Figure 1 (spheres, rainbow, N blue to C red):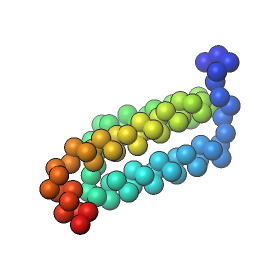
Figure 2 (cartoon, helix red, strand yellow):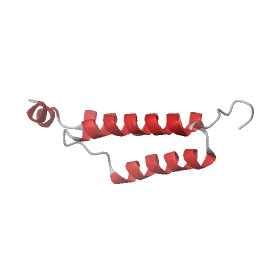
Figure 3 (cartoon, one colour):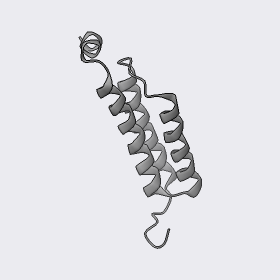
Length: 86
């Protein structure tokens, strides 16, 4: 990671994690859960980015985690989604 590596900011990392966790929790409240294997992959990417203290990689990992939850929600059967939302 050359000169483009962004300086690690623990407070920002915590806020970003809390925001992503809240979004995923809201999606999963609908009864949608991403596959366990995918969840493990997202968590591994988060841990790796945190250990590397790489904010850009951390943001990307969190966005991937949120996208995974959105993807699982979109795959939910439409009838089931409407019953749970309504």
